[in-house]
Length: 378
Image (tube, rainbow, N blue to C red; front, side, top):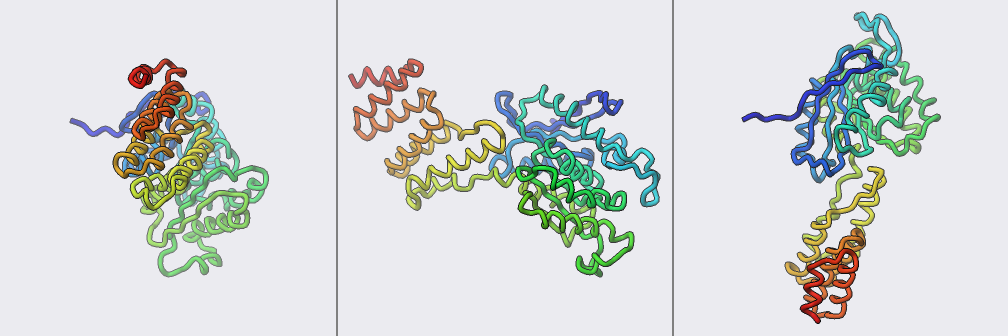
């Protein structure tokens, strides 16, 4: 027996002129009739395993079930940098500066490949570390509509004399990024001997990473009313170790709109009014619909079960009715919504309301359960 977390696929890129391997992870209970957000991960060989493991722990209540696409490397310096710098930090980098082509590959070739093969939501996340984080922020600034969520881990903003940092203010002013979620994690690359106040005055190579990130943070703060971002500093993590906690916190951050803790009020229903039990469902699923760009509703069976749990488990008929009526509001074209209401009113010995709802069910699709109930009540 094997434990399989994904499969390897590939596509030929006409833009990059090469075959590109991708790693695909599907949710454990993957269902072709559902739609899933997509999380794109750069440096798949390093980051893919961490994210797939975290997804297993975080779903279904902290983050949505997602398709995870890991992009492996052929020339990461070329793909992740937006300017050409032939020699940098003691290394040759003649091929650098291909980020514009790489984002074009993702938008024009990789996304359509994934969208045609799997049932995907119109909601995409990108995660990158180091130079990959630089690419994430380049995409955020210059291609804001490529993704909905941007997660950059200790990004190499020092690249090309902080070229991207210097362009940040101008790009923020040009775009509309309020609806985009940005998370930036920054590691302690300076050790204990220097704090973030002193490092701003330093000019040495060892501090250029964090200095650039601090400058980027300053620009974000200055424009905070125009943005939706979280910037987090990990004092006890270095450039390598920051990856794991940053991915966890980052996923929680960019999907902060997804958890629905108010749902669990049904476990202690006497502490809440009927409105306090049901109104959060309307506001939460309206928020989900906005984020996922389609109508999102709670599961019919879940609301039905809660409704009768209020009745049978707690003997709270008014609160039971509130859930069942909410189910009918979310699913007005489902005859079973009105069969459930009919059953409720029958349990309350309200024959006329039971008949009214059974007739609604029959009118929708000739529901046989409703017809049988009406014959019994005739």
